[in-house]
Each structure stands twice: as structure tokens, then as C-alpha cells.
Length: 241
Ligand code: UDP
Image (cartoon, rainbow, N blue to C red; front, side, top):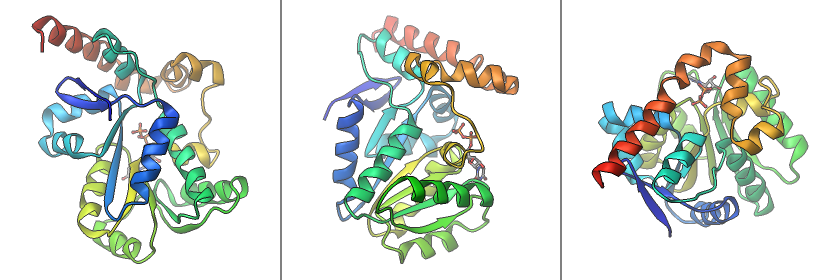
């Protein structure tokens, strides 16, 4: 397995198809595995949140989502594919359907998760959704105990980061098996409630630019995160870490 170190965290350098193939293997094992799709904001979060930092170190897969992570690795001389979390999660749903593996969706607003399930079922043949729940619950345990009895092999958790990664950490103690991925705003996209950037933006890795123009309030989320992240990587490189 190829991993490279970026600001003290190991990042997987699979291409898209390799990542999906490896994740399918994990999904079929008799243990719980966690996939984190990492972006520069999450590195910032890990700096101040030791629980989250530990999760990044123990996750079975940490794949570069944001274009910032791709730039960071490039500065260190590594060329890696950026794997958009929303595309990766969709691929895993398709693979689960092809392999008769049941899936669960947890997160987003009730009408969003419901519509996302409906759209996915219409689009993907043989899809078996055994559990779904919105993301506005109080007790993790209640949801996890319900989930435990469903036999889900792929569990997608859309609570935003770091909430979803912490939920998955708890799930690891309770569920018998399954591949769990934190998928951020993916259900909003699949429900059709949030539009994805046109393909050209996706190809160029500048979806964030499109989203920022459409929702200017996002500007303070990505700025100054991205330039500061790039600076941190450059500093560490100079220090020879
Ligand atoms: N969300 C949720 N419960 C919460 C907070 C957020 O289900 O307590 C959902 C929210 O409805 C959205 C998703 O989590 O569908 C995260 O969205 P966001 O775009 O913030 O995530 P990102 O991809 O930027 O991490």
C-alpha cells in the first residue's frame, strides 16, 4: 500500500479505481473500516482536536479529496490523483450493488436523505438500502444499535466533518463489520437539492471556486485555509520534515 506523509499524517496515494477496489476488499472483511476523505480544513481541525487527529492516524484509508491536498503533495514532489469524496462514495454504492452488499445512509435533513435514497434506487440496479436516517439525532447509540442489526456492509455518514468521523469512531466499537465513509454534503448532491459544479470545474479541480462564486459565504471557509495550508506544507518541506 502506498502512503505518503503530509503534515504528519499518512495519505493514501491510490488512483480512483485502485482506491475503490481496495475499499471493496475492506467492505467484505469481518471488521469495521473507516475511510476519511481529507481536505485542508481537516488538517486545521486536527491541529486543535486530538480526538480527530487520532482518527486520522487510525483510519484504514485517508484519501486526498480537496485540491489543496493534491497541491500539498505536489509540493513534496508526489503526484497523486485527487479523489472527490462524492464520486468515491457513489462508486462504492455501485460496487456494493454489483456485489449484493447491503448499504446504509445516515445524515442530512430528513427530506434530503429520503430523496437521495429514492434517486439512488432509481439509478442503480440491484441496490439494497437496508437503513437510512437523517443526521439530526441526539443519541448516537440509538442509531448505532438500529444499524447494528441491519447487516449493512457500506455505511455512508453525512454529518459534516469532524462530526461524521467521530460518529464513525463510536460505530467501530459497536458494529460487527462494514466500510464506513464520511461523505460531507454528498446526500445534498444526490438528492438534487444542491447542484454540482459543471464538469470542467471538476476536471480542473476547482469545484471550490464554482461553489464560492455561487455561495460567497463559503469564502471565509476556504480563505485563508487554502493558502495557509500551502504555506504550512512549504515550511515543513524547508525544515526537511
Ligand atoms: N448535517 C447533519 N447533521 C448535523 C450537521 C450537518 O446531518 O448535525 C449534514 C448537513 O445537512 C449536510 C452535511 O451534514 O448534508 C454536511 O454538509 P457540509 O457541506 O457542511 O459538509 P462538508 O462536505 O463541507 O464537510
